[in-house]
Amino acid sequence: MGKRAPTLNLANLFTIGRILLVPALVWAIAAGETQIAFGLFLAAGITDAVDGFLAKRFGMSTDFGALLDPLADKALIISVFVGLGIAGAIPLWLVVLVVSRDVLIIGAVTLALLLGKPIKVRPLFVSKLNTVAQIVFACVVLASLGFSFDARPVQTILMFTVATLTLISIGFYTREWVWHMNAQGHQVD
View 1 (cartoon, one colour):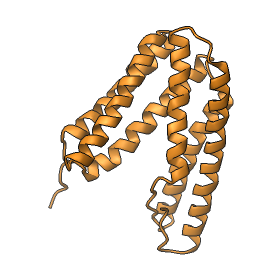
View 2: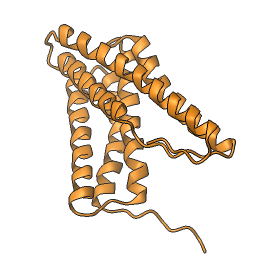
View 3: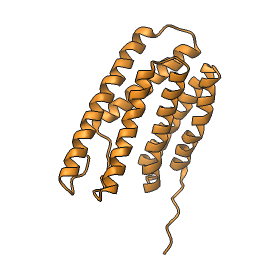
């Protein structure tokens, strides 16, 4: 029997739309079109809310969507952070920290799989808080650039919140990975 094609429904189409917004968003940041970048980032956020609502409210949850949604979120966040870092709007150390966390998680999952101890990663509460902080931070930075207002005090607080939550998240995921690797059958919850 061949593999089944992924189920495409309206919720998944919104998720795919979010992924398709990423290149336009990166272009807008690189071109200095920060109002457009802010608008695209808001549109991406709306698609995230809509796809989640449709999936939960109308039973449109699929395995394909469960894989695609976090991929779309990561593509969006990493692209925005890298774009803002290259544009000099946020410090490069923060970009490296945010991107490195995701690379470490992907590397740990891959290593576990290669060692015959596959691990199923579920987002931790601190990771969800981290994602919210990253989105709010990026939104404030893009808004302040696009509409020329000084948000430095808020940006500084959000920047250190993102850094702190990212480090805590790395610690929790590392702990869960080590436990998993030392006790077959344990899953990251």
